[in-house]
Length: 257
Image 1 (cartoon, rainbow, N blue to C red):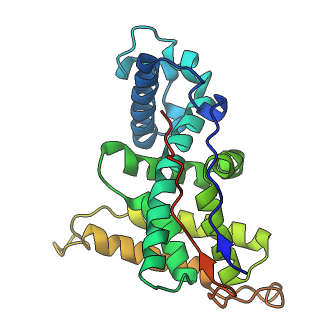
Image 2 (cartoon, helix red, strand yellow):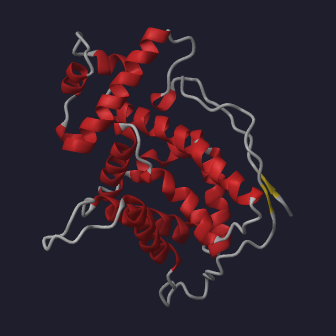
């Protein structure tokens, strides 16, 4: 049986930090500025150490309650950041999956895992890698389950690829989800420490792309390593899908505007 890409449905109800229907352009721009500043500050100082008032001030808002107006509270703000990045990463993962299929490559476990993780290492505007730091804080504090339903809601392509990956490794859902969380945390740890630069003896750290490749190898080891004896009878990490994949790029444009 062939697997096809799920239809993308955009929720515009205003839940989970999403913009409301009919929101004015200037209001959307204010939201975008607040999200960018909050993401950077959370990455630099920690989610629990940054006040909403500080975010409003650094975002250039005269009203110190601007963040509460747009996001209600800090949790709503974190949801807004996660939503924004999840939608961006949806597009990137869809393109990577389409490129893999167009090249005739086999969507095995390692390639699918790469597609899931690589967007977290993308560097460009100051906010994207800051998101990796934010996500690391959330996962290290064991808070990810709180936000997972939001990712399920807004990122059907990501969930689809994760489903293919689960089939490829042959793990029960509970074990697979735990392994994915731990492998993602391992990936983020490897990316953020140590920084690109040089060791104490002056020898250089790897360049960024090499560092990403090494981080992926470490994450693969966590996901694909042999399970413990208690689970060995239930898990077979073949790393190969049992049926062909019919993947097409979504025709629905995914934006958070």
